[in-house]
Image 1 (tube, one colour):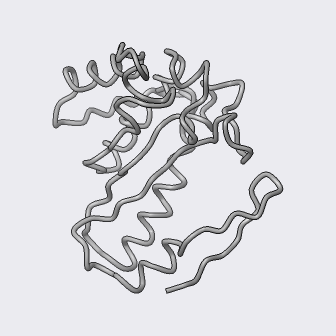
Image 2 (cartoon, helix red, strand yellow; image 1 turned 90 degrees about the vertical axis):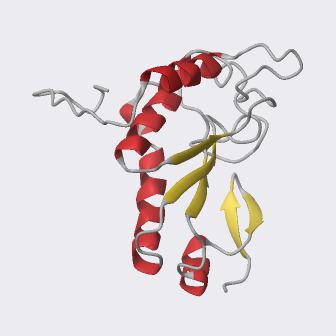
Amino acid sequence: MGGERPIILGGNKVPLGPEARDVMPQVGSLYDAINYHFYPAFSDRCTYPPKVPRDTLAASWLDSHLAALRYIAGLRDRYARRKPIWLGETGSAACGGQVGYSDRFAASFLWLNQLGQLARAGVQVVVRQALEGGTYGLLEQGTLRPNPDYWASLLWRRLMGERQLSVPVRGAGSAVR
């Protein structure tokens, strides 16, 4: 397997462990599923870019997870065909979530869009970080009051079924969800 490689994030050298592209050829289809983690940005608690953008309804922000999914799917297809892909950890911003965004209704658009697109792509397991903790928790840290993404998740669970419907909209741009 590949060794640690420093990368530059926010002007700092950060050592990372082996990358998926180095590990996948070694483990191949040894495991039952391919698991990855994804956060579209870092909160202000971290010095690393990228940060949560001003326009959190922009298609580029809402779809930011698709590049990571394509990358992992490509590795899976090459080294572990037919294994399911799981998103084992996700939230609106790493490092505990972004205060004033991750704990607000505005972040629910990102969360619900991600759930819908991952379902369409065949991802059957999505694990949200976290139930309680930081500002990205489904429950407010300390009080356990539900944050908006809790209600969005509950609504998703109660309304969505096994069947996917694709409704084509003529002339609709990438902003239409």
